[in-house]
Length: 177
Image (cartoon, rainbow, N blue to C red):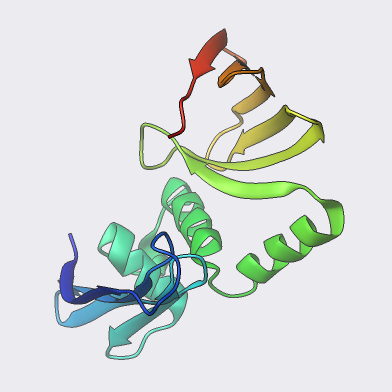
């Protein structure tokens, strides 16, 4: 649980869907204070980690998510921290993923599952108009998920998902006003 010490959402004449943010949240763990600061707009957010006393970003992230430093983390916790670091763009991970996206046209993202340790790296691309495929690979296990989504006319779309354990298809309908 984080304590929000500053939380501002503001508009400066731009789109109502893209407000400005100035949020600072922190957590006290023993004699240490760790936290995250989010600034910029929703579409161009910057996230920075901070601590008192000073720590490197990996230890701050470990204290935020796990309540202890990186050196006492097990393999599953390490996978979770790696996924969180990539999602925050900490270090070079965020820039590397963005460079891959720009050069290949692939969409790369992290997706979480039902458990906090269920984090997948998802790579996808629109192949033809209205047909999008993706493949997600678990970071803490060997599970993989293949998805295909096809947009039909009049707000309908069909999505199929295949994993090692199950296969399913869903029909979606959406209405925009």
